[in-house]
Image (cartoon, rainbow, N blue to C red):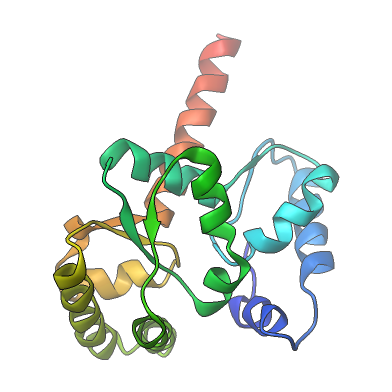
Length: 192
């Protein structure tokens, strides 16, 4: 299930159309095609999904919850949150982290703007530029506090890969995929 992150971001920033009806329509279509489990590989989209949780036709694996579960499993000292400006503004991760007992550190405004620029470079397929910018961001944040990085945007892992630093991140994509596999296999073992 794809979502237009630019449209999501635009709506969150105060302009653009609300993508909620399109997200719900897409999820309903997937369920009508036989999906027993839903997952959306876009962090920002979950801001809208949280508002329509009761209307979802099937169980949904929540990317934010899956990512924070993985963060909690991998570190007890907290982690830096690397996400779009829209995701930060919604406090989506911050809210769920507080509920789950996970400490997340937010970059200051200038670093957050660099993170958004890094994401935009990935979207433009400029992985070298994104990696270079990410390297500076990671260095700056690590000097402030040496913690792992939660890649809470599906573009960010590509920038990590461009500089060979995947080991420093907790990828929301990986966390979502692993959670989906776990739930699917748990359901299959119950049916056997």
